Every structure is written in structure tokens, then in C-alpha cells.
Image (tube, rainbow, N blue to C red; front, side, top):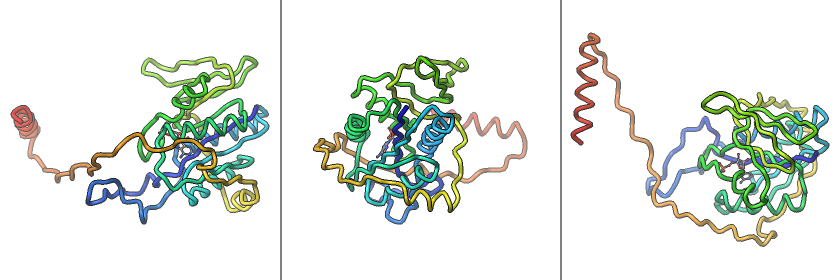
Length: 252
Ligand code: AMP
């Protein structure tokens, strides 16, 4: 099996985001970026499938600015064999990413495309689903388990009523949830080795695909500031405060 795994560069999830004063978006100028956490689970799943003899090649792909090669390096250090970097400095919406990934799929012909279930910057949770739609391939989203058998894939999903297992024929799209695995940490030797792995870097524009945004961001605003806590003397006082707050809420 050949696996393509899509990795996105996002503002590091531990960084406190600042909204631009004009409300046009978030200020990423001096922010620290890293690989999207769910993409790390997707890479780990791909590498584990290779280690267990189910895959003979893992190709990591990213779409983004020149600096996004750092997330490819993470995927390569974790064990991916080679990388593809479609360079664009433009804002790419999930549909644009899905269209570009479709073109990569047509070139690479993988049996499985693994993605994160969502990118933590825009929380879109759309790219895998759109890619499955564009390719007309079966998909399983939010996977918390992946097994390979003679019929294809067995995917486990955690759902409200427990766990559901689905059988998927390949080629297929699978998006990774947090509980899928524990992504490995990489040390300097793996990073040094990763730097020697091949990366095919080319402008996304070379694919001749319309990636113009379809959405207009009207306004971005920060969450309301938290008001300070208040110490209460008794449970009865707490109940009174809750009742008052609820009544005030009903009035507004
Ligand atoms: P989203 O639909 O934006 O929440 O992203 C879901 C998943 O799609 C991510 O976890 C990645 O696996 C993939 N993805 C989204 N954007 C990109 C990108 N620019 N480059 C590579 N993969 C991406």
C-alpha cells in the first residue's frame, strides 16, 4: 500500500492568538508555528502501517508558504519517506486544498490518504470530506483505530453510543482523531536523517487549479474577557447569585 499523508502548518496551539485591531483576522506575524496536532496523528498512523508491513511508501504533502517545509521535516523525521511541498503564500480554504490534494492523488496514486480530522487554526474539519467527494472515494472521518485486512481497511470511530467499526475498500480517505495513537517524538538524529530525504517543492500555481478563496471573512473578534471570580460565604448565597444572574439573562 502507498500512503499519502497531508500535513498543515498552523499557529502552535499553545500560543495565545491576538486578533488584529481592525478585526480583519489574527496577527500571525511573530507567532510560533508548528505541525497541526491532528496531522501528527495521521503521520504516526501512516508510519505505523509501514512499520507493520502494510505500506511500502509514505509520502507527506503540505500546501502553504515557503516556511511550511518545517512541517514536512517533522513528518519526514517521524518516518515518512519523501515530501511534496506545493508552495503558495495565498490563503487557502479547504476546497482549494482538497482540489490541490486531488491533483497530487492523481499523480501519486496512493491507496490511502490520511489527513488530520481538522486543522486547529480555522477548525474547518472539511478537507478530508471534500477530497473524498472530489475523488468519489470512500471516507472514514475521526478515526480512532485503523486496521488492515484482506478486504481493505477496518476503521474504528468513537461515537456517542460507544465504538463503531466500518469496513472500507481502498483507495480511501481517512481522517485522524486524537485517540488514534500517541505520535512519536523525534530527536536530532532523525531530524538530520530527514533533511536528506527527497522533497519535491514546486509552486501550487503550476497545477493550474483555481484556488481563489470563495469566502469573505467579515469580522474576527476575540473572546470576551473573563471577569474575575467572587468568593461567596455560603451555598445559599451562591444559589442566590446564580438565580439573579439567570433572571438578568432572561431580561436581556
Ligand atoms: P481542515 O479541513 O482545514 O480542518 O483540515 C483537515 C486536515 O486537512 C488537516 O489536518 C490536514 O491533514 C489537511 N489539510 C488542511 N489544509 C492543509 C494544507 N494547507 N496542507 C496540507 N494539508 C492540509
